Length: 112
Image (tube, rainbow, N blue to C red; front, side, top):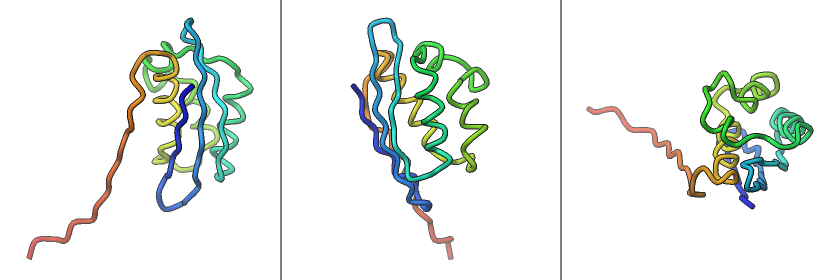
């Protein structure tokens, strides 16, 4: 089982994700989000049942069911949750190690 917490930034809509994978590289997702749009995405993914980790993690953006559903539900294209979902699928499906992914943002002062 893989657990991911997403702190998305300014919106402060925290998301908790849990992934369970099996030896066939099939992954199920469960999650809760304070964002109603992300929660709709999570509900639709849960309704789908098992996802094929190999197809999701190694395909093109256009062939990802996660990104296709996010396109219909999530209102902010820079939301990091769909990518976090794919990273969880990849790890739960045995296709990668579970390691933290970090985006650090710092505003630099302009040179004088």
